[in-house]
Length: 421
Image 1 (tube, one colour):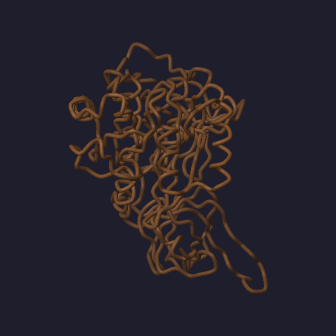
Image 2: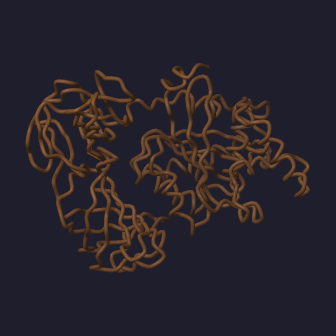
Image 3: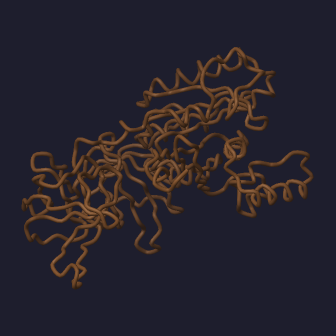
């Protein structure tokens, strides 16, 4: 495969989730192993560790569980990212922890995903963490969810067990917003329906996991209607070759930009036309999410980091009082009326926690309005007041302009991930 073909290939970001010991790390290891995406030295290294631990077979979970504590305890603690490719598509996979206390790590891994693989132990069926991770995947706007009913070998590859679990999952998922939901019976340990079809489950007529990942349609996941370009950096080379060049670098957050388009700059409201769109020394005829480009305008306008270039008649809302669903990540509980720094696209600001409306009970999806103590891994609806207007869209319309993070100014730690509703 030449480098140009590789660069032009589709990129699918997906995450794994599920309860403890459901086999998430083993699944990814099996996917990499059976798709021949492991280097020889990596294979030899995990063979040595598996042998030292007394395992008769290779422990494929070791491919993603790289921390010493993870290997000693046989669990996943932090998010591990792996990159691989097949002739059809490139992949970035986030292996996330299953423990309740690491829910914030799961949110980190899922925040940029196109697809979530949620594992269920066929022996235990739908448990609390299954519901928690399904709810978070729906809340984060992940368009595609694939439920992998794992360890089918331990229930004698029973179709009845598979169908019963699918029925439970459909009943719970019907309360949520995700529309594309799929079910695959697998054994990550033995490789059934991961890359190759299983001889033990002739009753299953659907796709294998890799075939699903390679062929699922993701082009429609991006918002190509609302043009949003948050400016990250102003480029002024002042060189002999580019004495007057003034470009605005950033990542397209939505829509399609083309040279000649009439645009407006926020917050100033000044208008101009796009003169050129540059990337890697070339001039492009169009730019769309999630491309990183440099835009030049025909007019000299004062633009700096945190400003946003949009289309004339399609601007985001400029708001200071903002309703959020917040996933709390801080070790300390949220402080009512507390002040936090925030980042939204390329803009930095500060905010006040104006109101805590309710906390979500993950198991029942009920709203608890009496409990206002928002601790680590809790999900709640709040209202904030910002020091300057943010240019926002609803999260279900644009995941980039509809999300922000809260930062504890005393520690500089990210304490909350917010979704505009």
